[in-house]
Picture 1 (cartoon, rainbow, N blue to C red):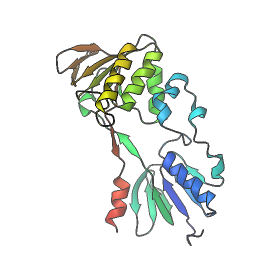
Picture 2: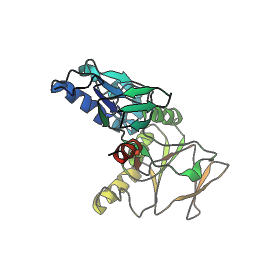
Picture 3: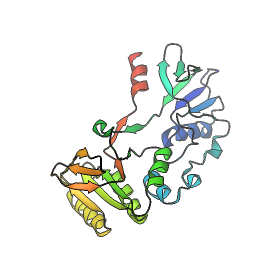
Picture 4: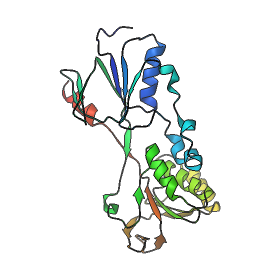
Length: 251
């Protein structure tokens, strides 16, 4: 395969999608330059275990995407792409340098939704998306600690269940009337709630956080209070589509 361009293929995003594209290019015989650009310093890794096994053992090797077969792919780590110049086929990086490309693949994934109202919380408030996030959460999940997870979706429930295994008191706060409201039927949601409660996890449905007090208590809309040493927000994700929109606008 020949793209007739000395700058080859640049893939922005070193998650599963980006790595798969790079592997498939080599698999089908493309031998031109391939650059895999990531804004993280970590080598490519799988994200789903971050809320499960990685929190238990912290083994980064176990979540590696095993990129040995990428061969001569150039991994550009710790570089955030700021803009796409689709006319001149150049990426402008955050450090001011330019990266030319022949073909561009945007595999930038998503970022966690946040709750700006908790930005000044007296309790650490984190999201879980990167291996760095998972490491910070893992450091705080000491036996006897009290975790409040905002969001009763897959990430929130996995995190609460894993924290419980570590001897942490976990509470899930969900704004809707049931868990997994966007991804599971009512019967399954009910079974999940029962399962987690049997594991000692407290679940508050149809509730949301109104305040985090200076003494570390989380206040809900029914005025109940929950002591927290750590709050993790797991209320879904937003597409990282800024670069795609830049490229589309030039079409």
